[in-house]
Image (cartoon, rainbow, N blue to C red; front, top):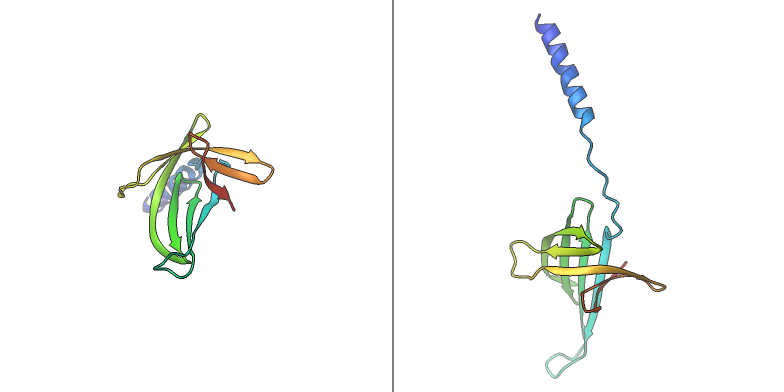
Length: 125
């Protein structure tokens, strides 16, 4: 009787695990987006400073944000993102960073994320 019960339990586990499917997220924002700023040399800094911001969007509506100065990571955090009516909302829980609402624009040069005023936030890599 124990063998029959064990066999039925195994069959039930296999059937239940095969029935659950994770929906596929193929949103075009998934990938790496970046923005590079070069601050000119000043009296205190003899060389220009390169500041790179990078957003890595994944298919679980999460991502990782990095801010790098001259190649060294100065700040990193996770973020959540959502998509609604052709706009993306990026929120940074646990930080004092404000939510960003952006939209994707495609051009001959490539895709970009722009804010509501049309300012480019990041370019697709």
